[in-house]
Image 1 (cartoon, rainbow, N blue to C red):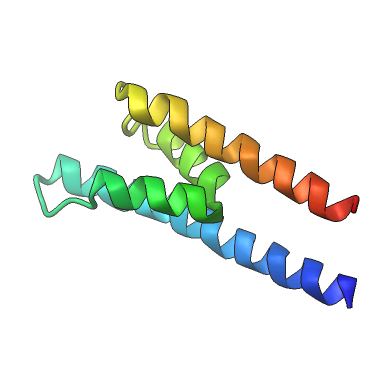
Image 2 (spheres, helix red, strand yellow; image 1 turned 120 degrees about the horizontal axis):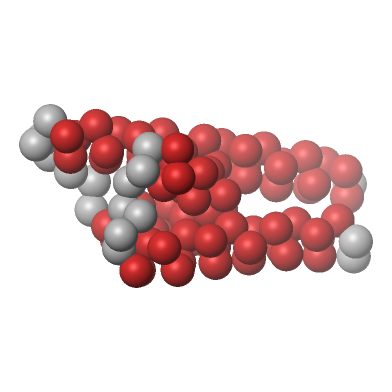
Length: 92
């Protein structure tokens, strides 16, 4: 049973990190094209719902929101929290 739960959690985190990465890329593209943007609240919500690592990588890869202290602090924090929760979940 533990293996099934770990597999589901890993799948969820994989998807959420992909969503975080893609949304950062989409928002950067829309910023360049002066199009409709994804709200900062949504970007941070995705990060703290398990997509922190992907969002942080998206921030670096796309050079997006790197000058916003809120993102420069909170995205790495959400990535670290995800890693801690994964480690804790795998060892207990």
